[in-house]
Amino acid sequence: MTLLKLLWTIIYLIIFVLLTIISQIGGIAYFISLFVAKKIAVCKNSKANTLVLFLLIYVVATFLIVPFVAPIFGRERIKLKQNTKPASFITNILNRNYVIHEVNVLLNKTATKLNNTGIQLRYLDANFPFINGFPLLPHLSHNDGKKIDISYVYEDKIGTITSKNKTISGYGFFEEPINNEINQTKICKGKGHPFYDFTKHLTLGTKNKHLKFSVKGNRLLLDALLVQSKTSKIFIEPHLKHRLKLKHPKIRFQGCKAVRHDDHIHLQIY
Image 1 (cartoon, rainbow, N blue to C red):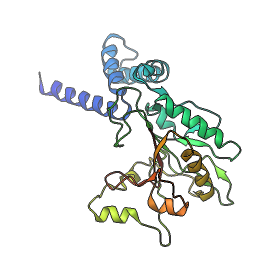
Image 2 (cartoon, helix red, strand yellow):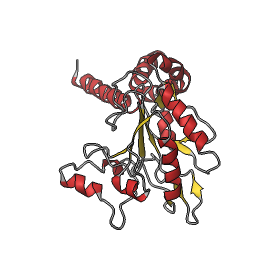
Image 3 (cartoon, helix red, strand yellow):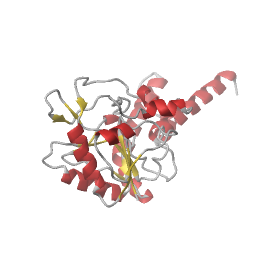
């Protein structure tokens, strides 16, 4: 093998690993596109052939094949309802919108309870469609179909609840402690956990800067989640638990080894 071929092999493997990490099926779709591109020429540029075929194969697999195969592994897509939507288009495109059936039931019951409140249940990363134990990075525990992140509720300057969020990814915009609230980030970093606020680098861009954290809206959302019998744990930052006057035992602190949870709510079921 020549040095050039070795270099390209390493590049292909790196691309395969990265696509697998972010979407689970992306690496397989990429390798298939490399193989097919050698047989079918869409255009004269071989790299363009591979890209076109990869996008085609990936989209077909993501939206037409994976949803029908995932139930074999005990997973299903999050069911979209009138007031249950992804907070970011990225979640669905990267196949991070799969859960076990019981989570879908819980989300549906929660959304129904939120009817007529103006609150839309907006989900972020859940789980990949296949294989228990397969990591959904950068999350530590989203690997069994039982976990899902949910966006906080925001409101405009006059207090009207909105379904919009503050970043493109849905992550990374923190609701900082105020007044005498606990600054858990400072505490965790002081204990030697420098990556506690790592998600600030994952916003992919901020937006809707005029929106503010809705105390009323988030209390209604969390109350609707807490009354569900299948809800096991909910992670939010200690200062938000205090601000929202929540004392329910299912509201927990996730620990300093995880990341801060004042940009999203983490929910998991039994």
